[in-house]
Length: 121
Image (cartoon, rainbow, N blue to C red):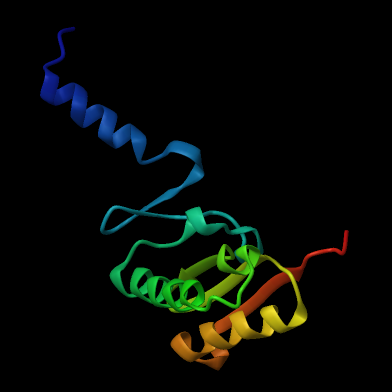
């Protein structure tokens, strides 16, 4: 059986929709099968509003020069307007300040703070 290039590409595209347990969603998005507590930044939806919200929060965090490198590098995961903060910060003050910035952009009820304080060495 001889396959044309077009048929081979079509077959490959259809087959890729079922890789790694993901479900195809309109717009080319794959909805993560992971539970919300297991999601990572790679699981963030790439819709414009979530991407823009993440960008605004990241920009505000990076602009604050009082933050440690750890605080500037926290993970910001936005899905359907809900923001999850993950990673390590150096103090309780940084943890609260990062959360405050996220709340300013997303709204108080839309931020889940899972930041951890760095253990003293």
